[in-house]
Image 1 (cartoon, one colour):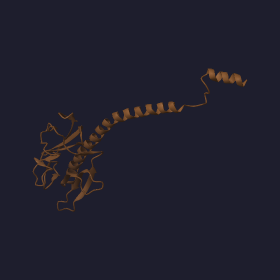
Image 2: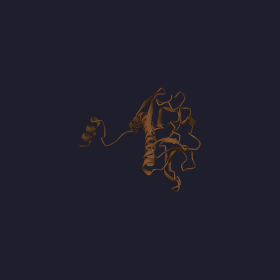
Image 3: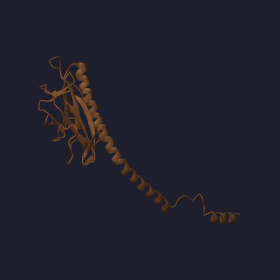
Image 4: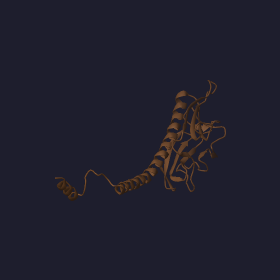
Amino acid sequence: MKELETKLKVRRGGDPARGFSMIEMCVVLAIGLVLASLATLQIRPAMLQIHANNARDLVQSTLRRARETAISDRRNVQVEFLVNPAANPPGNYVRLTRLGGGFGANTVIVMLPLPGDVIFTTFNGEPDTPDAYGNNAPIYFGGVANGPAAGMVYQSDGTFSSTLGIPINGTVFMGITNQPTTARAVTILGSTGRVRSYHISGTATWFDY
């Protein structure tokens, strides 16, 4: 009887309970690693685009919030784009402050960091946006890098201006270092406070969202 069972096992290719050999396990592991690497190569570019889009959305929505708050509260709201401020962790932030204007203390409304590895930046060869407010610096308002020294505010009538009350146009450029396809831009039209956002195709053409 045992002899018959042995012959059947041989005909069937051996003992079915013996499991995988070490070579078979290594082959399966190698295939799995190759597939995982390919998946990572495909996912990373998509994740960079997601981070860039999230940063653009954050800047755009924060500016719109500043305008709405200025109108509803009848107070000027200061807008600041901060690079590596004294914050934990250091990074690139958008900060809104409601100014007291003689009716109380200034109040910080929000201070939000750009998500992921996104920073305020421009890339070599990157053109100006269709609004043509200038691109001489990542933060460029009223023809001045980083905006007027005295600061920038949304006024209670919805306009965006220097603290002297002069409407100013400008652009905030952002992206991920060494990744030109992640370039994003948000512009403000001073006379109305209108906010628009753009993404770039390669390093040549901006497209409105």
